[in-house]
Amino acid sequence: MKKKFVSLVPLSSAAKFRFATEMDHFHACMVLGETDDMFDLISLNGQYLTKVPKKGNSHWQVVK
Image (cartoon, rainbow, N blue to C red; front, top):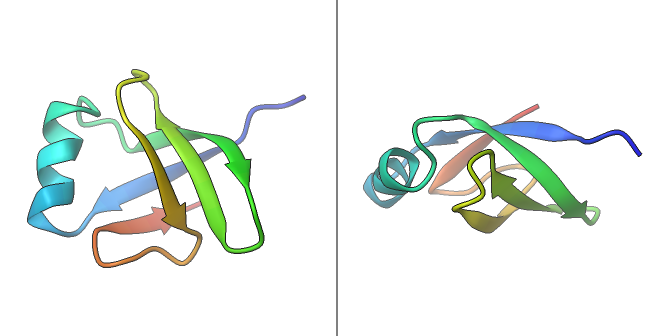
C-alpha cells in the first residue's frame, strides 16, 4: 500500500510552538488513517500524532 502524505501549516501560536518543538519544522505528515472528514496524522519525525479535520481548523491548515 502506498503511503499518503499531507502538509500542515500552523496557524495558532500553540500550533506554531508544536511545529517548532515537536515537528522539527517539517510541514509534511504521514496519514495513518482517514474518515470522510478527518485525518489521523503523524509527523515525519514520529514525535507528534494528531487528528485534524480535512478542511483544517483554527490551529492547522491542511494542504494536500
